[in-house]
Structure formats: structure tokens, C-alpha cells
Amino acid sequence: MEQLFRENNIEVKRVNYFIDELTEEKLRDLLKKSNLTPFEILRKKEPISKELNITEETASAEIIKLIVENPALLQRPIVEYGDKAVLARPIEKALELINSK
Image (tube, rainbow, N blue to C red):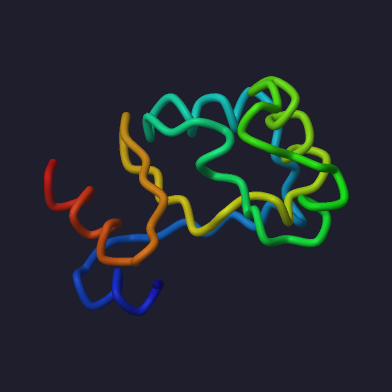
């Protein structure tokens, strides 16, 4: 991803939520900017997701809490650009977001 941005002269600040704490406030902000639900950004195939029995019926607030407590549950990369964000899967979605400004 970083190479793709460099090739397009876009400065990148990478955040690793395994090192830099992901707060509920930040996650809610990313969800708002991306117009996604907590379930949509959940890595559903992660073993811990199955262990925690997270389903579409699980309350959004509970999913947010679980993602903050277990960052491996967060799909990534999420690219934030100004007042918008996108789950960059595939990575070209990030370029679409940046080029739309």
C-alpha cells in the first residue's frame, strides 16, 4: 500500500493498532467517516471472532468494544483522508477516495 501511495506522490502516516491503542472514539470516528457498520469492518474469519460468537445480531456497541479490546478483529487497511475513510480492500479503493477530493 505504501508503495502505491508513494508512486502517486501521496504522503502516508501508518498506524499500527497493535502498538498504538485504538480507542472507541477513534473507531467510531472511522466508522462514521467510512459509512460502515461495526459488523462490516469485523474480520469474521478470525478465530477470536468465532470464539466470541459475534454475529450480525450482536449489538454494534458490543462489536466496537470487542474490536478495541482485540485489534486483530479489525479489517485493514482502513485509509482515512480528511473527513472520509475507506476500507481499502482492494487497495485501489484508497486511491479512489484520495482522487475524489
